[in-house]
Image (cartoon, rainbow, N blue to C red; front, top):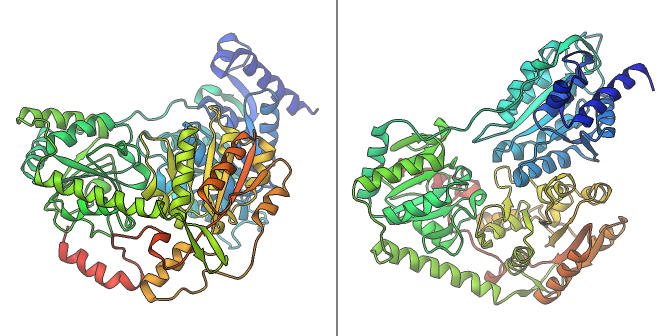
Length: 627
């Protein structure tokens, strides 16, 4: 062992023996001033912020960081999961933070690996999840082109890429480590909308020595949460608008999580009905009479009815993404918007708006007090608006029930009767709820059907990565079970196309001890896009092929994976799931599913979307509404 490795090992042992950096400093076993490399200062700084988990695809651009992680893992201070794909690492880190709150860092080499990790980080950026991204970068002394850097004679090109995606910092000067860590913590630990922070480490500054470095420079703690929105006038105007409206719809985004109690009270006071975005299922329990389920371009009959007929919109913690508000045509009769958000841009999205900038739960409590001062009392369910919404919800339940009652259809591609996606998703999600498992939905048909079918009674049952709608997210997310300090069982619902984007999770999941089940719904095509093509142009193109894949054999080829055929009936699928659950590690269930024109084969789209052949009419309606 060389001298530097010995010193690092001694420091790591001192921290581990006392229980942490602060304890070691207090005990005097760790000096406050050290000679150490930038890489070690980084690991110490992240450890001080509670980052103990690293999902890494190491390369020549991250060797020194990797060596520090090796030593600190040996002391039990951190854990490094060496993975096979950077997109997978990004997704797993995002899922880990999303489900458990546990912080993680993605570590890659320079160039292609960093680009892949950055591509995967689109999910964290879109869904507001804080994750550290640590990439190798070109050297600072510019001795000539570095292998795998952006091949252009210009400085800071990767920083430019990263700072376009989010917030980035290049440690060109090692002594700037404390500033880099503070800026990163402000992003990753943002109390209302986190995101990925890209920390770029030039190859030659990673091993650079920081002389007499003061550990007190390493920052601790993140920014505090916001309180209630300020300004009495805004609350008074919002209360007046809500009480004078006849048909209030409340649209729930990710910022509404944590405000269930307040929302339920407010709904009764204003005779409002809640409509969810995919990221907010469970905020209002599925069984609640004032919950109209999902709304948007892929929304439900009831959710879209409430949006279409409302005359006032109360938006809570939502960005109003195109599919969520039907490309700004989802509220054709709304005359005014009350918008609660922590982001001014999101709060002022609509033209006729009363904006309340603050934490959702805290702001709602003040708004409720204002409503009560104005004489608001809990409403019954006998108003015309309530009756109409209740009827719409009944129609939606009947629509789903018809599909669940017809769970299998003959499919031309399979040449036999196979399960439909609605029946499969219903069976898997009900089974997962009985096991208290966490369900991840992948992009495509699986996601579109899933977010309409789930019956979450609380937040945290299902995670639908609809922000980026990133193919391969769900299967990769199962890897989070291997890294989580809070054990949970994961079920990934993935299409055949999405699974083949990130199949290496079969290997990495076994290698690192993941526990969960990947359920692949195989319609032998990109079913969501095929359906969109047919709906818009009457024919599909280049979204299917003739190649037959034996997915069970593929998964079975990985030692440690239990791979099962889900069969052609709900009963056989449930038996396969039970058998999969008995396995202590990673399991895999393959389910052939129907794709085609039969109305019982899927759930329809009841909203609008500004894409393809629909663009002109949707845009014209948006401008006609003028909201």
